[in-house]
Length: 175
Image (tube, rainbow, N blue to C red; front, side, top):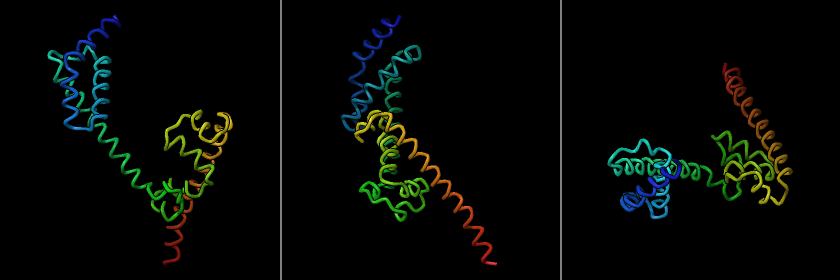
């Protein structure tokens, strides 16, 4: 059964990969187009029973959706990068983090705590890989990350308390 599915997807690939690639190349860069082609046929394998006859319109619609997902993800990454650009150079300060509670919280952490959190959250490394970056064991990194997260939560809770207290103080003094 699995071999039949694989054979069917191979047939689809042989018959339509060129058209899917051409469609993708007209919309994205060559490297992304190759990823889209691969992803289209992964989706085709998973949803083989849903593919109508003729299959090309379905394959192109799948490519269209994958390209849209690519653009949405790229847009989110760009927005995040533009917000974090001042922080990428290691300039962690409250001035750069104003209006961003999480960034403000990160700015208040030590460089060591911030690095542990960002390796996992921003760089999307697994704990073992993050430990290798820091030159420590996985267990040591797990402890560092746990403590850093705990400190970040405490800093953010303190910020929330200060923010909820500040308007009441302003209201009380303006009477």
